Length: 182
Picture (tube, rainbow, N blue to C red):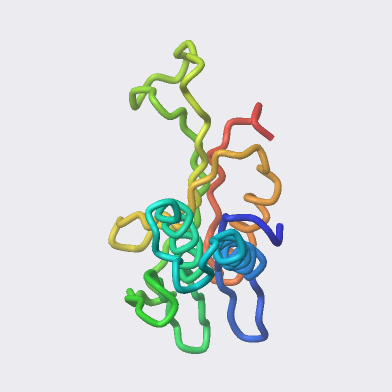
């Protein structure tokens, strides 16, 4: 899943991390620079006439793609430091939220139908409702930390990721996916 926009599990010698794949970042960066190159190549005046009215939308798309490539989100699990670090922001300008690995209670996979009311199990599905799977971690204080949300049918890779995190952290894994989705 190199070109996936989903977080993927990367294993290192002493820690694991859920990160945005490098291939996806490079794809966004390439699209941004390709759009910019095409603007320069098709503008009669070249670089000096780059900021004309007809180039506004392509310039916005190029800038958005390049900025999106710099988006940073990851969960770093480190046994040696007894820490779980959540980082979100831009490449070097991101915030860190720190938790202790020893404070984690379990890893959970939960499935629900978007657009349904809580507690309605046998509800008739409508065309606009989607199956949603969340990968979360519950801490000992009862707080649920959502690591990732999935809408795709890749249940086996999602379950493998959840099991790997639970095994690494040495905490239980609770799979609440309905049996029909596997």
